[in-house]
Length: 233
Image (cartoon, rainbow, N blue to C red; front, top):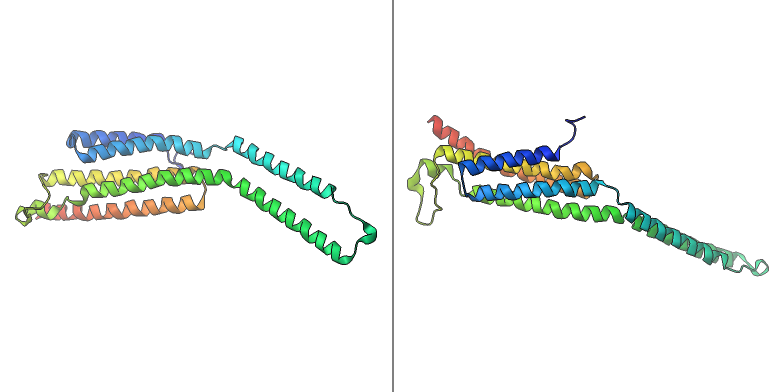
């Protein structure tokens, strides 16, 4: 079904259009450059998530070969054991069975460890990419941090050390709205990793980033509400 999965191409198309809108409204602005960075990350995410979704057959074959070699080695060791039944007592039997059980347990644990290598490699790649998205969300928040609607309505509140605020009320509203859209897109880009890789740690990180972008966007909408109230007055 086309509407049950996120389409990375559509997300990239949305970012491209948003970057064009920001560049037209605020040419050479820092927000425009950040949006261009988000576009680049979204394109990289398309390739990364596709890489994560694909099975790594070379790694699976390698793990299978190592496990087969270990099994053959264990079988050879067992075959080389010389058992003298006439000298065998219950103590020796228990000791031999315990040693054999320990060898089998270690072999099974080793095979399980090797079998999870593919998942760990994919997890490491996904978490590194998600860390970039988290950092970008904070960068977007830093750009809107000084956009205070109160000083737009009351410029006398500014001090000598206040940041320059040259945006009109309409321009400030558009700026904040663009920042909110960028945060929403970052959350959707992060969700692409959860869509292609069912890993508990990755899923928790994606949920964390979505919560972060939602909370940051909520702060922006509080400012937009203040601007709307000022306009009505």
